[in-house]
Length: 279
Ligand SMILES: [Zn+2]
Image: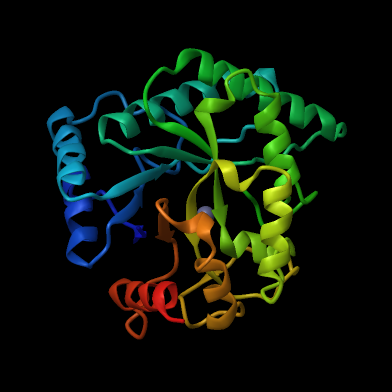
């Protein structure tokens, strides 16, 4: 079974977001549980709308994930971790109320000298979050495009962090295909090799979602610019090799691509469905 869809706006509420993706022929979606530009927790949510969203998704076999606010950074030290923790727990709570399976959180960047400290910080913050969180929504760590020091662009970093956490069962992964391509983790032609690598370190055992994005820039350029499906550097042949691997079955595959008049999200979704099934 495949679950495909797109990131959708919640400007008309959570239920409306689910209905929108259903109307475009999708059965998976991502949304921001709260204002994505700030860490400040959302004080109250429309419980009725959240419940209606969860019920609608269940009834129509739609799977959803959410995305943490952009300023959320797992790598910051104790001086900034309280606000990160509060923001993450708030996003988890809203996600859970809406029936979302996972909250996607970037691997984060450490800005200090001692980069190992950044890894300690991530584990510590994740441990704090999981110790206080008992809902169904998982924390999904997303790979990065390799900007800065290139942190969070390998399978090994993801699995090592998860393995060192106290409650790894509450943590999974979200693979962003544009980031994987931009970082050079995936060069397009070598999916088979990439899949073997990920399998060897146990990455795919905990892959819970995919951000399916084309890339504006070439492999390894470390530039994170998403392109519509059919209009990027990865290309259909290589996207297909990735899409048809068994790890993508039964997990949400969500577009975070620009929607244009020549490539609307419904059109891109049709392309993805074709690539998933064609031989
Ligand atoms: Zn992404």
